[in-house]
Image 1 (cartoon, rainbow, N blue to C red):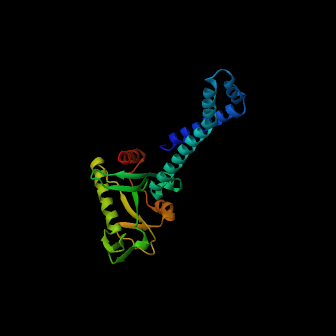
Image 2 (cartoon, one colour; image 1 turned 30 degrees about the vertical axis):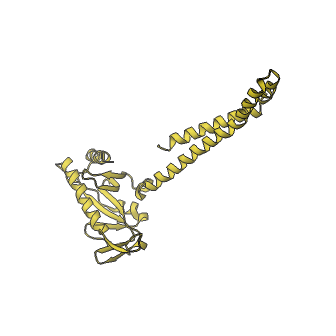
Image 3 (cartoon, rainbow, N blue to C red; image 1 turned 60 degrees about the vertical axis):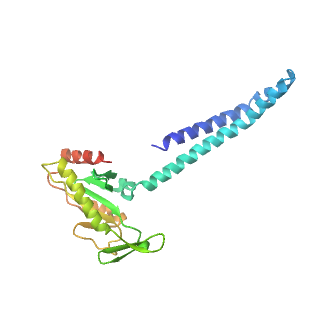
Amino acid sequence: MAAAAPAVIGAAWLGIAGAAAWLVFATPFLARLLDLGSYGPVAPVMGAMALAVALTAPAAFAVLGIARLGGAVGHARAARRATPPVARGAKLLPDGCTVIPRVSLPDGRRIPDVVVGPHGVAFFESLPPAAATRRTGERWEARFADRTWRPIENPLQRAARDAERLRRHLEAQERDFVVRVQAAVLGDPRAVGRTDACAVVALDDVPAWLAALPAQRGLGPGRLARVRALLEALA
């Protein structure tokens, strides 16, 4: 939506450029401007100025339109890069599943790709790039710009803690019902083993993985709608 206004404005400027070009080159308008020089001593100057404006205006309007459209395209690309991966493939998710691209918990922690459905709640955090990380048991290290390796938080443990934070928040809102919250990280399950508290799922396998999750008993349509509303309020 944020890119729509610049795109509309850009298209409008291009339309104005086309209309101005038609007026100048396809109608007698230009010839009349050239005749201004015959109406007095000041008329040639005025005619030259009007002619210059008439000849440059279509190009100027076109430049404005192209600049606006270019900005809209850049904004749309940036927005797409900012959208987490599961949200980009939301149409592939099982029926009844809704993905919220990102929620912000009251403590400031942001959780991406939160999927609400009959299974309860699941979310998917991305693993750091494999080429820039290494592991020794549960110890993870990342290579920084200065090419040194430094310890980082275990992504699976972090996701498990995020699941607990999210679960506690939902419990505080739905006191008579405990919503099941499943943490997962996006990665290759053959390279990174899952834990009891966090699954490892390849991005292409997310729809099938969600479909295989058992439906949570007691999570009827009304309660599911309330849970979804609670999470959308954090978006």
